[in-house]
Image (cartoon, rainbow, N blue to C red):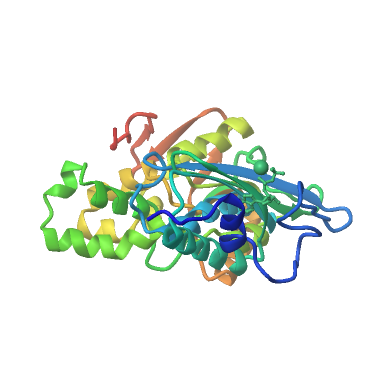
Length: 336
Ligand code: ADP
Ligand code: MG
């Protein structure tokens, strides 16, 4: 259903809010918004683009889409240890659908308000459904968490909530797409129940902003898990010039509980290749181990140490029986 109004009414109706600004100096309505970072703070800036059919299913619930569009960006701020301040929204829409926009904005603002992240501008145009968000955060100088600080001997950690784990989101996606023959063997009732258990992890990931802040000064390197653990860990290894040895039993502890219960043989490949987890992956020196666990706990999360940084290069996995094998970049490409 197309509404009979134009671009400026759309912005006024759905994205411009009648409330005083808390973070920005100037918000929506002028040629630029104005941000005034606290004296001496650095601005952390990140952009993510979401394209219908590529990053989300075109018929996804617009409320959860509004949430996720911002969540993936806030997750980047979290990975840097930055505090969210503001965001901009670039929107291409095939048509003006008032109900869709209202739900999308509600999902976006609910998460934005929860993190004190103000929508301060954007652009709106007709086109294939595409959502581009840029987030702005602040972080004290030299405290941003980077990918390049991992050192041999550091522990490798991932976050997850209770009853959640790596691979939940990918499991939900595969249950929706019905493309993985391994899952097709399960009874329909089991698939429905697993989808119910994991769907929110795919559609409404919770960016680990508080954890990112708590890891300032503790983590030697950090990134968020968007493309899957093995790929994202390689980014840290490449940037830091190191190798890593992961422990299968520990990784299993951090893997999707739904999968572990249903078919443990899939839990590791899904945890490694997953994607869309939006957990944090970081390294920390051994002397910070207890503080790291407490930091996660203080955020209502668990941190699992899944392995160790080593000198050299490459990513390897050690099984419970001691056997060590490289994780080939294609070995866990379970989803092609
Ligand atoms: P300009 O033509 O100067 O680029 P626009 O006419 O595109 O400005 O936008 C008018 C105002 O509305 C600007 O302040 C812009 O940042 C804001 N805006 C446009 N689209 C959006 C959107 N999708 N969400 C939030 N703000 C928006
Ligand atoms: Mg414009």
